[in-house]
Amino acid sequence: MSNISVDASGNYSYTTNSSTASTGSSTSANGLENTSPADQQDRFLKLLVAQMTHQDPMNPVDNAQMTSQIAQINTVTGIQQLNSTLQTMASQFSSMQLMQGGSLIGHEVLTSGNTLGTSTDSAGKVTAKGTYDLPSNAADVQVQISTASGQLLATVPMGTQSAGRHDVSWDASSYKGKEALKYTVVAKNGSASVTPTTYSHDKVSSVGTSNGALAITLQNGGTVSYDKIVSVY
Image 1 (cartoon, rainbow, N blue to C red):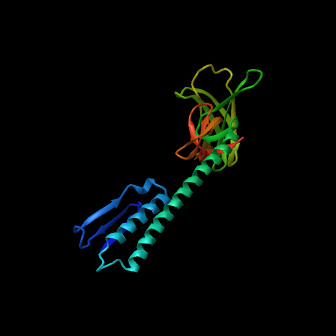
Image 2 (image 1 turned 60 degrees about the vertical axis):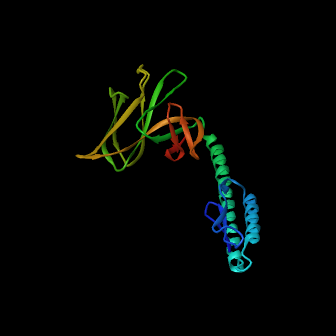
Image 3 (image 1 turned 45 degrees about the horizontal axis):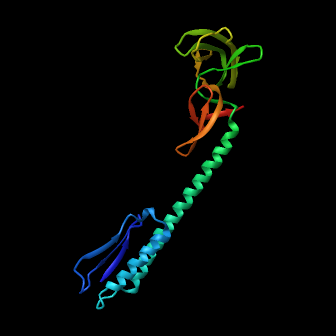
């Protein structure tokens, strides 16, 4: 009696125990996961013919067993075709995402952080800008501007502000340092502190993909994933 088996990776094997063949002899076809479904079907049929050739005439393969073996190859082939289709769809989606991401190049974006974005107008004035969210009303809001190493440069009084998103700008024309400018928001409502969420301003210089996800390269350095962008201007 002989039998063909197939595992989840698409590897086939058959064994024979005929009176003319040595007991326990086996033939296998492995490493088929890298072949096409058509190639695997061809190899399966060759194994099926070999099985029929070497079967024991006194104990042949019954119809139920053969039907089960054919069902196995159909299942494995279907799964591989589905995987191939999903890979194609993922590749197309990645290409579409990259094309759409290209429209962000040159635009200003908000990302999580506390780095001030700077811009220079035609007169040479340099303005540093940040944005923050207050979770609740605050009676007194101050924005402390410092260098990346922690040197305090200025404190900007913002007064009373309601809950929500607010912008802060500072004339950075007098700053001649090379370090990035950071900011910290100190907000209070009476004796209670209000903890804001701060955002960094930057411009998109290029887009690409990383591990199948859209990656945004920013003008002032660094790369963030698309889902980290809070707003686009």
